[in-house]
Amino acid sequence: MVSICHHTGVCLVSNKERLLATVQKSLNAKGKLYIGEVSYSEYDSPMYNGSANNMFHVDYSFWVPNNVPNNIENLINENYQDYYFRKHADWKSESEFRILLRGQDEEPDFISISNSLDTIILGVDFTNESEYIVHQRCKELSIQYGIMCWRNGTPDLQIHKPL
Image (cartoon, rainbow, N blue to C red; front, top):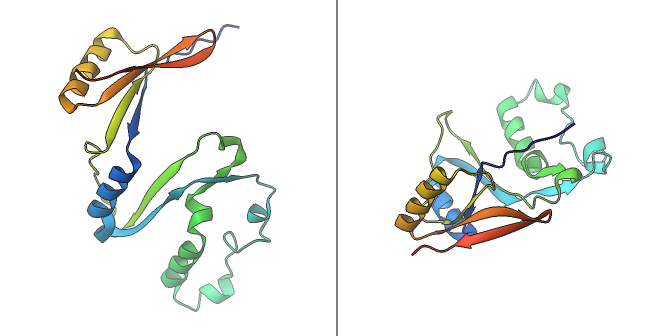
């Protein structure tokens, strides 16, 4: 069986400090912001089997006669790291960072990344025509772009500086 992969996507590399400044300026007043590194653990850890905290335990005999929305908010605030910033250990090579907004409404929010964008990395199978368009746009924005290549089974990133 032959497996063919086409690496035609892009990866956007941002300056974390500039991105966070933009996020906080744009979204702080729109709701609760949660920002942080993702941690990784096995599903058989105490966090998942219920002995570490109550993130998966809801005592309905307490919740029903009391203020349910307030209790839900408290549960989220006490356990947001486990809910939003934890993944299985299988993904630990990712080194993921997340920004989450729990807003007041259901409308999507837009954050411009233009002032934090440092590099655009193109997949090895990105077309020449599309690469030319990205190259021109990177020149306009004064940012670099790179092309992912494979050398004897090892990834190699070729960076192109704007002229």
